[in-house]
Each structure stands twice: as C-alpha cells, then as structure tokens.
Image (tube, rainbow, N blue to C red; front, side):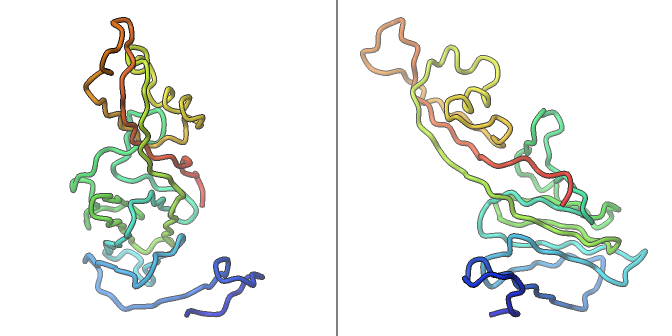
Length: 208
C-alpha cells in the first residue's frame, strides 16, 4: 500500500506518501505507461544522467478526460494545442499533429488527447518535469433563451452570466441549438431550446 504517510493526517484520503520508481531505459524511444490504480494528482518525471543525450517520449494513460498542466522546474509549459487566438486559456480540437516529436528540443513539450486519454510528454533530462491534474467540471445544461440576443457578442460571457460563473473559468464551450422553436409560440417570441456543453476549471498557474 505504498510508503508510510509523512503528513500529520490520521485519515486515509488525506495521507501523503512519497514514492520513487527507478528504471533503466533507452533514449530516443516512446514508452506507453499504464498505472494499476487511479493516477496521482501530482507526479514528477526526470531523466537522469542524460545531459546532451536524446529525449524520451512518454505516453501516459489517464482514464478521465481532465486538464493536465505540465511544469518544467517550476515553469508552466503550454500544450501544443493551445489556442493562441483566444484571449482566455482554450484548447484546439484534438489532432495527432500535436503529438511531440523525438526531434524536439523543448523540455516538457506536451499534448493531451481527450479522445484516447493519453498524455504525450517529452523529457530530455535537463530539469524535473511535473504534471498536475487540475479540478474541472464537465457538464451539459439545457436552457430556453432569447436566441436573437444570446449569440450576439460574447457567448461564453452570456453562459457565465446565466450560470453565475466567472467567465475566465469556462475553458471549453459548445452550444447546440435544438433547431426548432416552441410549438404554438407567439410570432414575437424568439426563445429557443439549446444544450450547453462546457468545462468549468481554473486557468493554469504560471509556476508550480
């Protein structure tokens, strides 16, 4: 059941156990990693004694599509599919073109594919590389809204106002229109049923 708890916790859920796992591996290769239980919220990888050597690409499986932040040393490294055109932190749709290459020189280059559950993480051995799973809520909400005004301007802001959420915490937003209005509705009634698909999570930290 792991090493002894080193915190002052007397319950199971809050115990902290530091584990070290060593392995001898070849560089310039990709390794697929599956854990036998729930992945830790915070885990560190380091490729020791590899100064100037070739990198290793880790393909780590996560059973849930969560946001996983990567830090090199204590610096945040943005994923390859970050949307640079968005004013807030947002991701582009999943695509294999974002998988890091073994020829990359970027320590901690990363990409998480939510469709397969794999995190791709490049380590070169210059510094420790940490991942941290961020708390997030993925939900669908049905609503009846004034469709003429809702889609004008900032949709995410409108959703945030509807749910009482800080707009900066809405990471992914998908609005699905039902495509039909209510039966027997007056001609002046522009309300329509929609389904909101969104992920609510805090923005990433700049440092670990």
